[in-house]
Image (tube, rainbow, N blue to C red; front, side, top):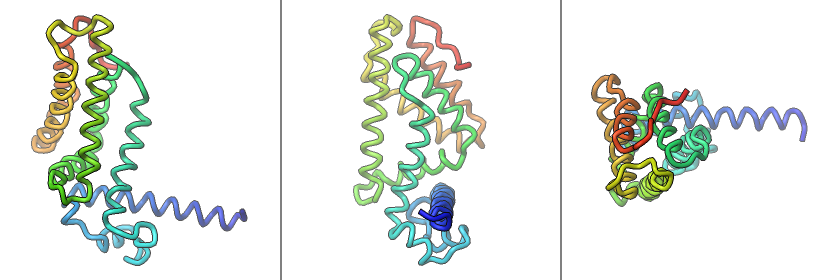
Length: 201
């Protein structure tokens, strides 16, 4: 591979990342249905055909945005178990408080995607199923460690945690970003545990 070819690939990757960032911003502002590929292309300083070279359809761009954000968050979360997993999820809420665009994107698209005809419908069905399942597993691990209060069902607790986490995002957006999402989540988990649940260092 020549230096010119490598430089071309690097420019292509950089432009693709810029398109994803601008699409994420616009989807968060106006929703998927209200977003225009031509507007995204203009924001990126490229032509509409130039954008289609990277993403041939609006649906392919949407799914690429969602997958990109998930990959970033999954890498950040790592693979902790039990209480550490719950703590890390609360930390993610704290991180999200510095990323309004991402929170807005997911809140808007999750609401839109309840329609079976929405291109991200299957994505969000799978995402919620996986989120609840992995959080329920963390609660089950906490129970096995003797850290969960008696009478708390891990499956129910997993559903409650994800519902609270996503509901807090809407409250946070509507409050002008003053709701303490991470603080509320930590208080919720502390009330369920028999051991301390400190903030991450």
